[in-house]
Length: 114
Image: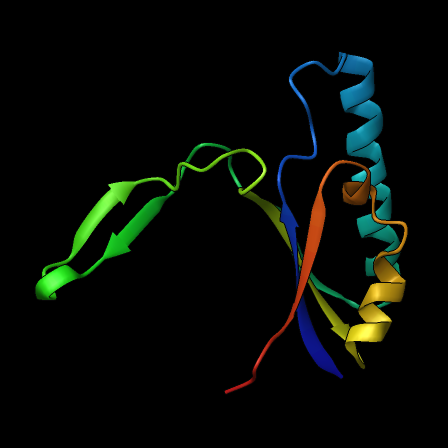
């Protein structure tokens, strides 16, 4: 089995959503994640904190650390799932009903074991 990183691009929740809609949406994410965990394929999953992080650069050999990343909401990475699967096709099939697809995009990347 290979490891695949499933990245949630963009926000899954919108500011205009009612508390009830937010609750229903969060339940969909939780149910999907629990189903994948129950299949033995889930290695790890987490939501990333909003509007928080650090960006490191080393121009000219000097390390700079800035707050960020600050990106458009469609460009953020909101969370991830690390999944065991045999192929990209298997991960695609597994994610057909992922709730994030109702709002934004998912990116799948295979982990290159080193």
